[in-house]
Length: 209
Image (cartoon, rainbow, N blue to C red; front, top):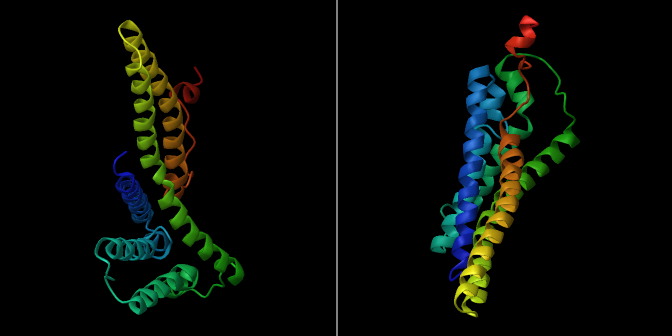
């Protein structure tokens, strides 16, 4: 509670680490499936990781030191190259494989996909601020509980402290549990999980017992 800004920064930092981990998992999936596009050319592939770490690293360095890590022009050029690689990944893949195929995705749709990619990087990272917010919320609720407990004496104070902590635990357990699932399924799983594969069938159903 004495340094809320630092808590918020930690929340964003943890979020960035988790998003990078999800993108690395996507690359691992691409390696297993021998999918060049997934490994190098997608927004959650190597091109996306470089773009994300470049922008995030430069922003973090500026806030910490007040100076730019590299020039603005260099950032714009590198970012633009990476965005174009992601945008035209189908064409690049066809060139690599020496195939003459037209891109399935229309150009206008590609533009909207790039805008969505940029917004998702921003929103997914900021979304992890809820980690810091719930930590601060926990401190605030506990302060309120003990403030009420200190206003009474004897068994009443002890009872208020116990009941108050139980309420805080139940309330936060519910809210934080829901938010954790949201961060996992939306911010993380959406970057590497395909939902494909073989349907699970138990041995019992296979043997028809």
